[in-house]
Length: 367
Ligand code: NPG
Image (cartoon, rainbow, N blue to C red):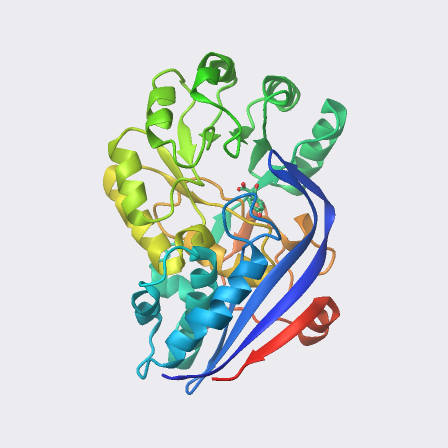
């Protein structure tokens, strides 16, 4: 397979409701899609970088720039291009994992389409549907939070994740527990706390949470290990886990007992599978995170979430949780689950009119 052209497409989709976290409020998803054209087939990838470097150091304009200036020209020079060869070809470039993931996914999609193989089969999926959770942002009031959680539970979501930050933590958790009984519940701090908050965070212990996600800074592995000694609530890492090597180190240092796998954060689906394998070998449960993906990214995430070690519901919600109109055939929840795509590649394609309606810029990279 040889790369013959690459399209970078910027899209802007309004969210059905604002999504507030400790690092900011999103009202629109400005995403970057990558379409590769090869001698064998075409493929799509979605870059999950956000508009600003607030969740991590990556941001969407930088992703487009590094793809255009470095990654695409490097891949264009590879004669026998394969999906597994993408990471090797781009290894000399440091970081930019979200950009690498988008490009690798597009090449993987093209390769699997050419061979007629679905991504789920390729990764080693064992389920044909996956259980879904939903991530609930920081709300203006407890009443609004309870209303939002109630609506999601009515829709069938099997697990609730609450975003927390100092000043919005014990009270919302207590309110949701009191109101909705023993629903599967977890919290996500997105690095908003310090080790010195250990005693405060231990006040979450009585609420029987599945996990607390990324309480401390992404580089503070030892801090998480220290915090784990003070909390009964299991610690899950997200931002800190950028590779299978990072996962192995965090596990052996006792920094986490659960890991959130986000393909964009770790450089793609192939590295995600390696993290899954490392975790499975250590008896560490994993679950699939989300970054407000469109149907394109969602389809591939669902394939990953169907691997055997993904034993907790993921942030793999239905299209309607994010967007009025998705750019693919919408994913709809059935009894709290989403179906794993079964057709070749990532198993979905953008719908032309829907994609055109949200496209803000298209750039064709000549090779
Ligand atoms: O359902 O896609 C989703 C959102 C899940 O909470 C979610 N994502 O920190 O995990 C996170 C958070 C996020 C959203 C991170 C957007 C970065 C960008």
